[in-house]
Image (cartoon, rainbow, N blue to C red; front, side, top):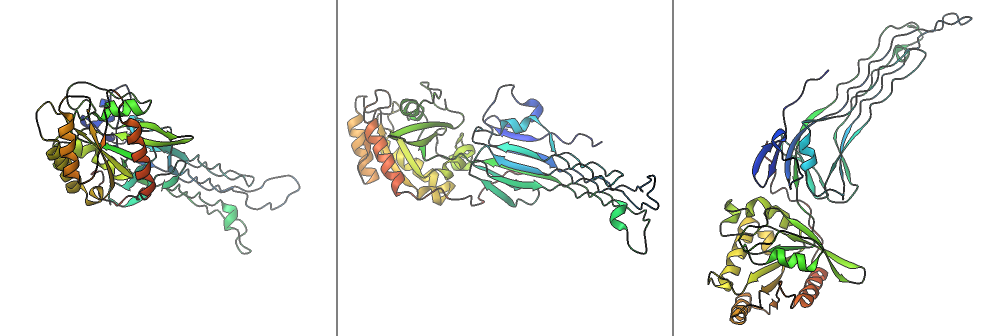
Length: 369
């Protein structure tokens, strides 16, 4: 009987936690390290036929069953790695030993671990990428079950008609996996805290993110489905607000910037009537610098710039200054009143038609064991 393994670690918005410290309600966790074990093969059997009127029946020991393997499978019903953090070890079933009368042992049942689409599976020791599970139903073998041992019947030869040799089952594999979730979305909402991203997502979709009059109300990415026409839709991701130095670990941005890597288009939301009196154009440039510092590929994504809070006094000059800084017209909207949202959806739809499909994982980041 195998003993219990070490508790797995998981990364949440509050930092690294042990599975025993996890909150009772589901939370957004996008990194986890877990231990998986495949099943051992069953031992072969040594037996001989002993039946009436069957003289010298010969060997009849069956082979042991193969141990179960461990797989990861992308399940579209999941959006977080939280469920994985509730178990310390994921072990497949061992194979049963062989029996007499030429009976082979039953094979161990495979174990399939469900993960959200967009999960990168790495070997925690070497850091090698095993698979980027982007498609629903996609599956990867992470620990192969051990082969069952041969029974003595398999060792019979013309010169060795009563063998007593048998094969021990092969041991299963044990591996530590580092899982990293990068949400898959068509459009990623970026901007400073309190730029109105959550309000906009709530207006355009059925998502109900937390909205309040203070910064960093969004502590985890939120997904929403936005209708763009008859039987057409796009997936929009609202990410925690970015601040200057986010790529270096300041604020929450560095923990969630990885999710922007999978988006095809960026929707840069800028508050053109900030209550702190800051310059919208400078705010726009600051976020662009953070994206480029984190990954040059992010800065090259197609971007739709939206001037938000056009319902407030003084928003017009701010939107003009923003358009001048961007070098092209910006979409003027109000997430609160709904003004300009139809134009924004059309602009996002057109941008998606020009954008390339989501790029595969580049191995840039990973979980450190």
